[in-house]
Image: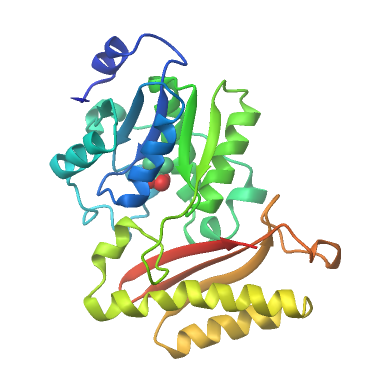
Length: 277
Ligand code: PAF
């Protein structure tokens, strides 16, 4: 497996457009990322993984500076998972000038939920993913379903720009107790790690409550937030949405397909999770 740092090296290493399967990451990898690499590998094409902590998707008060950079360890893990090429550019390579041309995803999808609480986040994500797509030119790209809204934003971007790339979602990997694997779990203390399970439990409880009685959703959601807050969390949202467009379900949508999504801060760490139901 080669680790390449420049666009020129990567282009020279690939046989041409649509010749690889691609897994974009920000590094600090865990089993969830490696499962995406194995999923990409199943296409029988060389697998490229990128590692780039993308400043554009972090607000000034967020964790860009403390986001762990663990290239050596990441490369070993990727090699073990069967990755063929790692593209690990530095900021000067990705953004030699200020990136003033940006992709602005549809606000109906990108300014709600994560986009509401992290303004500009999806502009940063869509812009770097579009740039990575033009650099790597993959046939297939795999994104984790843990970032559910991100996966939808990327799917729509690919449709709207008619990019010849198949976008696949990879199932969220969880600890035995149910905690969604995330690079940000590394910020949690031992006590916070066991408390963190409460987020997926709250989502499950909200989904069950809505299934049992699909009325007064706003009250169910407010109750779910209040229960987490009572345990010391600061919830941004816990909400049931239609899978098709992440809008609140109408009565006619109550039978699904739905997804329950949540984001909440535990201490200084913001966690997100979701469950399809
Ligand atoms: O999900 C991530 O790790 C990032 O948002 C991505 C897709 C690699 C873009 O920086």
